[in-house]
Image (cartoon, rainbow, N blue to C red; front, side):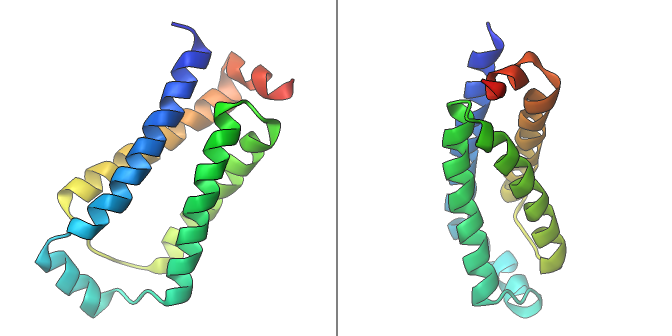
Amino acid sequence: MNLKTIFKRLILTDIALSILIVVSAFYESEQVINFNDNYFLMSDTMGLIFLVILIVYLVNYYFLYNFKKIGKQIFVILFLISIILLLLTGSSAIDAKDYILDGLSWTLNGAILVFLYFTPIKKEFEK
């Protein structure tokens, strides 16, 4: 199987996983909801910022899927912004299934970064 096909499947898997993470957020256990209500204070502004980042991620997946040069640059910037924002939000609780989905998402993002910078796929973005 060639690298372009694998890379495109990684992108599609990450999109599906992102959608699954958003949907699973609506099915948290009562304990997690109670904990987050008491200890995790997220403002409406921060929620809006996360929504905008999610939308930009989805647009960026289109750029990556079609090997647009700007997609490579935007992905790295979004990856770093996501890390910084998660550090700024503080502690929160999540269910085990959400924890697994989040870990898979970070793993896929790491795999995409490896493909973008350390495989022959990087040449596809220079055309």
